[in-house]
Amino acid sequence: MSRMTALAILLLAAILEAGGDAVVRLGLQATSGRARARLFAVGAAVLFAYGYSVNVPQWEFGRLLGIYVVFFFVVAQVIGWLVFHQLPTRIVYVGGAFIVVGGLILSRGSL
Image: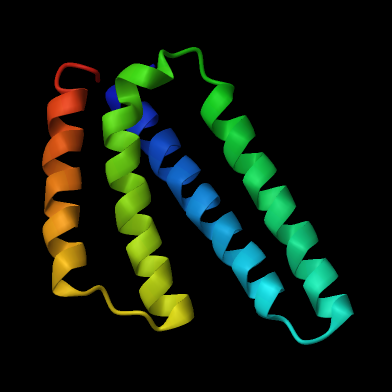
């Protein structure tokens, strides 16, 4: 598998995982039972797609986990900002910098 393909799959997986979690959170906030059930069903489908996409490739996921965690953090912050109108605080930026540096250290030589 090429480096770009692996990165694309990891980014897709992060989008699916953080997105599925956001859909479930929206379901928890829904006021009607029908809307809640639909959002839970969509969230479950998206989270299943995440699990499938990250486990189908023949790779050692543990070696790629550093890059995945960076992608997940960034995607989760973007979703939090766009969907839930939650701007990252200074401490989130500081912690995020550590996540990015740690991810780069863990993934060195993985791809």
